[in-house]
Picture 1 (cartoon, rainbow, N blue to C red):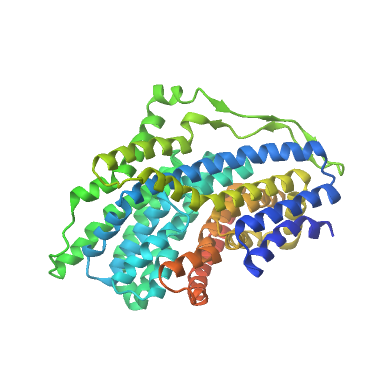
Picture 2 (picture 1 turned 90 degrees about the vertical axis):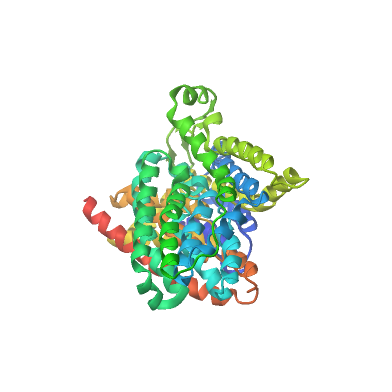
Amino acid sequence: MTLILAITPILVILVLMVGLRWGAARAGAVGYVTAFMIAILFFGAGTELLAYSHAKAFFLSVDVLFIIWAAFLLYRVADEAGAIKTIGQALPHLTPIKGLQALLIGWIFASFLQGVGGFGVPVAVIAPILIGLGFSPLSAVVIPSIGHGWAVTFGSLGSSFLALMASTGLSADQLAAPSALFLGIACIATGPMVAHAAGGWQTVRQIFIPTIIVGTVMAFIQYIVVTNGFWYIGSFIAGIIGLAVGIPLALNSKKKNNKTDGQLNVRALIIALSGYILLIVITLIIQLVPGIKSLLSVVSIQLEFPEIVTKLDYITPAGTGREIILFRHTGMILIYASIMAYLIYRKAGLYSQGSIKSILNGTVRRVMSSSVSIASMVTMAVIMQQSGMTDTIARGLADGFGSFYPIVAPWIGALGAFMTGSNTNSNVVFGALQQRTAELLGYSIAVILAAQTSGAALGSVMAPTKVVVGASTAGLGNREGDIMRKLVVYASILIILMSIFTVIVVILAK
């Protein structure tokens, strides 16, 4: 009975979102209220515990949402200037081969867009481009949906990975390497799936070598970037390097087919990319120049939390909350880049009157709903963790699955992403649960959490909320079911791969 009560808030969200098709914001709010009431009535949560839970959840939410808002602001600055359109228009003319077009635009460019934007941006931007190139509307949605999944955790300037760190209290040093390793495997496997979605097994065979080359390069670059402390630009840099490798491969195929049309407007492309080049430069300066790094580290916010004991004697030890270094925060770095990018695009004459208002309104409209859902789910997760509900669920999972748990771990992450539409929300809801279960079973916590976030990243591509976005941009408003059926097959294969890899790594770690 206790286990059923503990898992009820999660089941409520699942029923509301999957069964009744509620949005994440409404369902998250109901899940929060459910957790709040159960914690008081059945798990002995007192006023002090609830007060500190809300305080901790507030700062965790601010930490994550600062990045989300700032990341999408930078995307809107570039999009309003036509930079995203310029990049997208430059790519289709690089090769006449359909399979390479799918890889270049639906996989590599989609991963780049996920690195800098997220929120369904890759599918919304790319589906119309692929339709214009002659792909069927169904394929035009499926290709970028599958193509960007591997880049979700370290995409959106690392907001999902930050959520994993925030919900578990672990550092990037502990989590980055295994997470990047798992997602790197997913990246390499994604290429052939995109090729298959574009033209079946014949296309897979036709472009198999460039697919493996690009996938291996992007996986390797992301691993190097995130394990050296730059986890918030992991997918972004991997996408850029992927383009740098993929474009020459595409141009080579163009020469072989004696195609000479569609020359790149290099100047326009450089201006379009300047906002993101600035982000790289600013990040490197702040992280690598000691004087600037120390100057921006002066102001930080961190709270001390006392030991909390419920009426049922569940203890949450005393400790410090997550430190927010204000002027060196990833969100603030994105703000710096957004301001400088705006000035460059404005100098180049790329904005019309009222651009600032349009940028700000577009940012607020797109991220407000997801912000509400994240805040409510973060608070729900903290209440569940500090009242002992998470520990109860973890013990039930440990007893129920035992040695089979590594197989299940990625699917738990995928379930969270499917029902919330977000890798970030899944890491918030299930991160601490997976951590505690791994502790009880004696498995490597970092490996199980890598399975959690990789499963969530791959599972997020078939979330109903994302499917609806893709269908609307491709004119498939009544065919969401067809899209879902295609995505489930590809995504499930990738998640099965994550389960197998989790088992292998767990065995080798013993």
